Length: 189
Image (tube, rainbow, N blue to C red):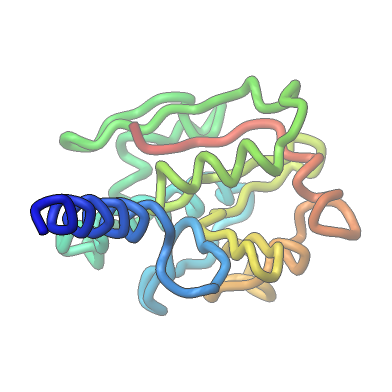
C-alpha cells in the first residue's frame, strides 16, 4: 500500500509538471499583444513615420502597465526622441522607459525568427524600419497558426488600425519580402 501511494504521488507530480510545460489547448501560439483601438495613431506631418510608430509602441507599453497611455503623444515623445536633422534618435529615455535601436538586423540570417523572438520578450511591439523605402511601422504581433505578423502602419490610408504586415507599405509583395527589407528596429529595454 505504501509503494502504491508513493507511485500515485509520483504520477501526480509528473502529471502536474507536464501540465505546466505543455500549453493548454491545441491552438498555436500568438506572440505580442492585441492593442486597443485607441492606441493607434497616424502621421499628420510627412517624414515622421518613425516617431509615430515609436509613439504607438510607447502607448501600448503604458496601456499594458495600466498607465494613462492616452497622455503619450507624438508631441511628448518628440521632445525626447526626435531631431529635425536625423529623425528618431537611436536611443532615448522618457521617464524610466528607455528605448534603443538595433541596426544589426540588416545582417540577421533569419529575420522572421528574430522578430518572433523579439515579440516574445517585447509584447508591446517594436518599430521596424526599411531604409530603402524609407518607412517605419509598428510591429506588435505574430500568429503562429496563420503565420502572420500584425502591425500598424503610420500612413493615413493604411494607418489607424491593425493590419497584416503584408498589407503595410513596407517594400515587397509577400510577408517574407517585407521582413527581408527590414534594416533596424527600435524596442523598449
